[in-house]
Amino acid sequence: PTVNREMLRILDEWECDNRCRVLVLTGAGDSFSSGMDIKEYFREVDRVTPVEVMRVRRESMGWQWRRLQYFPKPTIAMVNGWCFGGAFTPLVSCDLAVAAEEAIFGLSEINWGIIAAGNTEKAFAEKVSQSDALYYLMTGDTFDGRKAAQMRLVNDAVPRAQLCAHTAALARRLMEKNPHVLSAIKLAYRRLKDMSWDVAEDYLYAKAQETYSTDPEQGQVKLLAAFNKMFPG
Image 1 (cartoon, rainbow, N blue to C red):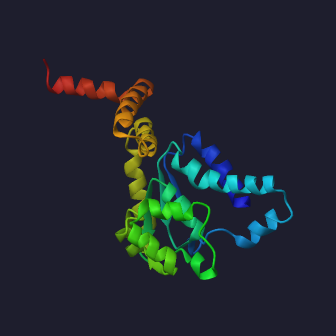
Image 2 (image 1 turned 180 degrees about the vertical axis):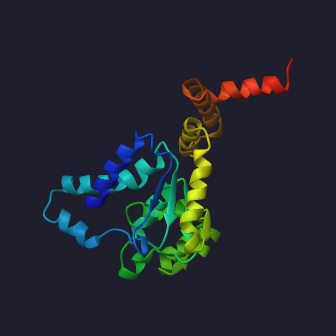
Image 3 (image 1 turned 45 degrees about the horizontal axis):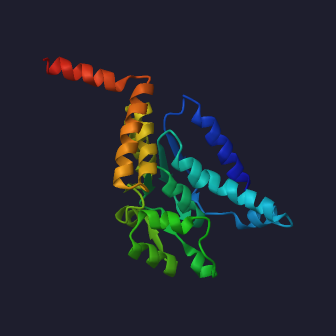
């Protein structure tokens, strides 16, 4: 719960901080994240009201998928090590993900006789095939970064020694793009996945018009000017 509150505060700060162009989420030490701190969680919710328990859950999910999925700037999950349980939610909520080949992933809840709750199963099912999702959810087996890339849980896997440099290069590529349009593209993608084709068409035309009219860099105007210069008349 403490980490959840800290993450919400940090995301709020970085959202409006122009020094932050790309958000890279990674872990300290040998882990990306080992999932929920069960001891701390039950200590904080012991002897509290159902409403207070709901608030703790809301804060947890608030940053792990609501804020990360719709964060206006590009987000990259850099999986440097152990990635278990609840760690899958922020991993999948990031726009892109790169893992160390040596990183170990697992949904081991079945081994403890519990369900991977908190949208963990939803996150996993969102990214991988039904066969892979059910196999690892039902067996509790682990898999490494290479397998995660093969399943498309992450975009790429590289040796741990190259992880930071590889992720930084990807972040720099994103920083070369028009930030206003890049934000509009990622947010539009998140929304349109649940739309019908007809609704998505109307939405994207409207979103494009809104984006171009509010773009500080006036990217569309510059593009049309360059086009007219190349092909006059």
